[in-house]
Amino acid sequence: MELIRNFCVIAHIDHGKSTLSDRLLEYTQTISERDMTNQALDDMDIERERGITIKSHAIQLNYKALDGNEYTFNLIDTPGHVDFSYEVSRSIAACEGALLLVDATQGIQAQTISNLYLAMENDLEIIPIINKVDMPNAMIEEVTDQIVDLIGVEEEDIVLASGKTGKGVPDILEAITKRIPAPTGEPDGPLQALIFDSVFNSFRGVIAYFRIYNGSIKKRDKVRFVNTGKEYDADEIGILRLNQEPKNELLAGDVGYIITGIKKSAEIKVGDTITHVSRPCDKAIEGFEHVKPMVFAGIYPIDNDDFEDLRDSLEKLQLNDASLVFEPESSIALGFGFRCGFLGMLHLEIIQERLSREFDQEVITTVPNVSYRAYTKKGEELVINTPNDLPDPTLIDRIEEPYIRAQIITKPDFIGSIMTLCMEKRGMLTNQTYLTTSRVELTFELPLAEIVFDFYDKLKSISKGYASFDYYMIDYRSSDLVKLDIKLNGENVDALSSLVHRDKAEAFGRQICKRLKELLPRQQFMIAIQAAIGMKIIARETISALRKDVTAKCYGGDITRKRKLLEKQKKGKKKMRQVGSVQVPQKAFLEVLKLND
Image 1 (spheres, one colour):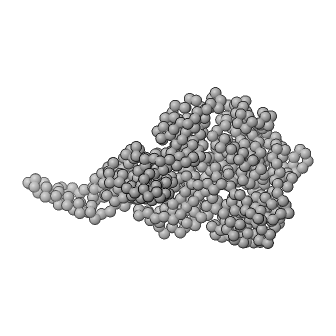
Image 2 (cartoon, one colour):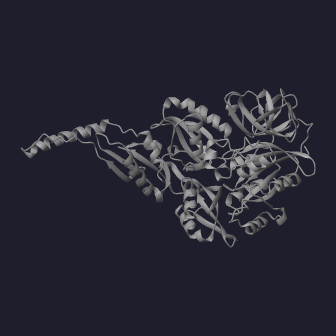
């Protein structure tokens, strides 16, 4: 155990974590030159295409240090985007140290601070690294001062590195051996191992990744998963290299994988503890935090026959991404589907993309919304995840919506436009601090519902990419919210209902009605598209009927002949309108949801 070091890499998005991890793998010759690719640990196509890390990735390296000892490093590369902070919390739970990466050209960003606090709460040893020092616009002295102010380390403790050229990699490896503590635990005690991740393999079932705190595990041992209470045989255990390497025994401090032949994804939970059946541990390990989803949306199969396939796909995805939450629901317009909870809009987008690529599931997603609380006049509290859960307005005393505290770090030039954007989103400025002469931190309190759609994109465009954004939930506050219904010929389309603030309801209603008018195909009868709050119509668009020119055969003669034919046609259209129903095509659903485009 003295020669084991467990550490993760944390940073803001696009500060070069995956590139630096590549250099560490190259330097320690964990991956041969032939197998080496950029972003070697990112194994999903989406990650490589977008250049972002979505999942944490664990890998074991061996390093012969200058003191002559051969060390075993367990490295976990983590995501940087605010939507995947859950993955970071899981990685931190399995480590004793963290490499804190700061981009020399951008300095400390909001997510850097957020991840740093997460690591400090878990008592991790922090090694600050300034990356991209080879860039011509690197501000090394300025960024060094920022790190010294933030963490309180000495200047000589900061490692200068470049993920591109490999500069500083030997210094980082030496710093890991000297500054990150070895894992502690009782090698002879009862087995106690924390599951920090899991994946599904169609041939071998569920593969769980774990970190052993106490005891040891051997191949063929009979093990129990404490939270689910199920018992299994350890068919295969091993360590995580670029490919899994089977071993006969793993000891305290090790990070590895276990295959028990579990085929059902529900039987394994991330954060569970593994112990021996014959000699169980006293208590389960305190797992990492259970993150509550922030954004809810309905996911429906395009063909209702695919409902069960969609359930299987979501269960397998949940193994790989424990922050995804879902439960069955049905809609009049869309049939059977699932109500899913996500950590943010990027998370929703990635899940949709993964369903399509990995499971060939093409789905329809309803308008994303957040979770509200409604209080009835009798004092009952109701959790509102969909607008259709809302009781009759006459029974409601008040509705509360979730508020977040947002930290935005930017250049002083963009303060005005960022404040305008946040005020438009019903935000309130609570603090403004100059971190340096060229960087300012703005703290806002905002309703979560206002930022889930397009806030992040708008912030990036008005600040020319220089603003960074991080947020966390603070509380629920009472708001004047109303349910906006969309009606087609007087019939509600439940999949298009939404909860909006009263001041914004009219503009939002007009926008949806206009969009639907463009998208819905014309029928033989007139279609009225209306946005309504309760019984009050606040916006309306009309799609005129397809008409045959019934007067074409009347040339000359009395005008009453034409009138008679038009009256007859009018009656027919009226009758058709009473009988006909308007079907919203699937394409229209997908397009209406892109309102903010």
